[in-house]
Image 1 (cartoon, rainbow, N blue to C red):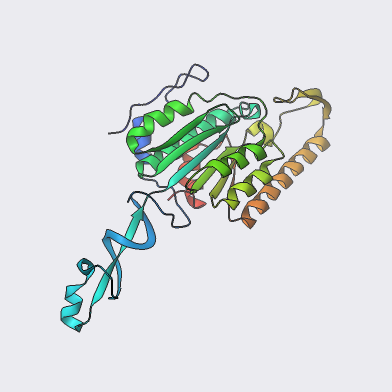
Image 2: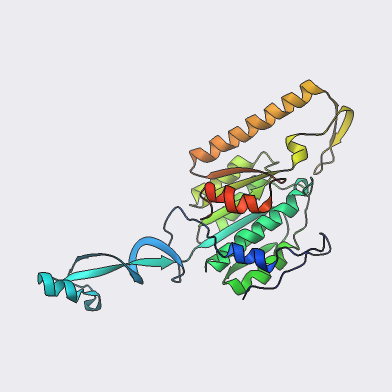
Length: 303
């Protein structure tokens, strides 16, 4: 049975995160792992490793020391040679969700942080429904980590944790991701939800890659950041540092801004491609279901 919908905390609109009909749609998805990773339990995820599950994969000649219980006696009756049955081993993974909780994320319409919370909730639920372990960390907050959970019955705990995430000040992405890479156990699929508004993103992603994580970067930007609705003489305020800058928002300035944004996204995309990471730019105006059921499936994150 699906867990009941959870309402958001007092810091966010009091509307359900997901309804039961949407959760049933999520039950049909799975997080795709590009490599076979060792698991502690035999879960629903299939691995190319040859183990002892119920699905036959292949056979090989018997060798001294093999388990007699795995001999294919039908093959012996036909060929008078011993063969060992090989099966697809089913393994669980730990799915790591990292949520940027910097002040810059709590901005835009639709709000980037609220959008990220819903994405993390959906991805976490998909992993739990697939019997994978899920851990969530809100970067930049104190003790804001959900320890690894397994099983769909943990969805309520996952949603409850996410809806209590609040934006903090600036987040040092390099330090936060390095710390996570050094301390996290059982590297597996890792999804970073961030606007990357910190120069340390490259060093942090390098640290994750060095530890063997399968990294997907969901680069979240609000529509107002992609196409700023600005005109005239303005004073802009940095949401994290409170620094100000005065500008004249004319056509030429906005065109240079859009080109700089395009170049930045292209730089991040090249960086991620060179390290076998998924890079997916996401504007928060993209319908939520389109992101999950079309974009992430097309990019090989979900299946």
